[in-house]
Image (cartoon, rainbow, N blue to C red):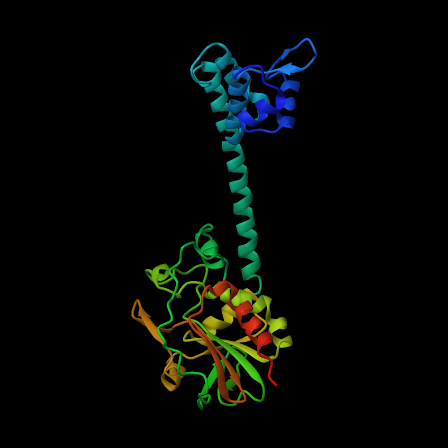
Length: 322
């Protein structure tokens, strides 16, 4: 292919006409001029422009593609067959390394700030073993197994709330059958991890287990909206002791209380689903909407937990009491 106009070159090389003109302004390609003043491009120009595009996609600045183009112009089969091209690769790698180190340092600083902020009002001391635990708790890993609906909560809607009192992180005893008129949202979760403590072995592989911290944060962030949508009260509930839960409430700055049920009495009273790990029996993640002493709705299974409060909020808005 020869005698091409600029538009034909751009289409053949997969770039814009504007890009071709920019390359020309830098002297990276130099077309012939016809008698009528039009530019005339050939196959060498197409190859050069394709090489510039390929190198740019690797992060090599357009201005630094000259050694590679010179290698092609010298008759080499590949643009990186010359020592100067190899040097260009090394220079680009060194620059990327510097950027990665700078970004890594910035990321570590941000994690440190997050750790300090998370423990500012907490009774525990921030751990000093890097980013691992903190990043694990506050961000859901990819490709978590999705829990399947096994029907373990199908019987709950319509049941009366059991006569059961649980200790709250505020120090009150909360009667599940005495929550008052209107709707109360109780999200039930397995356990909330701490930055300085390891999660149970194989936690990420258990469908629906991972994400209690992110779920609590979502209920925190949408708490006022939940109240505005008709929830009179919101509680979190787990089998963890109240002292442990208080640390979570402080660290995450939760505007609602947690309920402690270490003997899983609520699971016994209502037939709630549980699972076992590392010798512990824990609640499976589910959420109850209790209205006027009766379970009105049960969310089960819950996934993904980091947006579950928003799922509850949508349900409340779509199911306003008459």
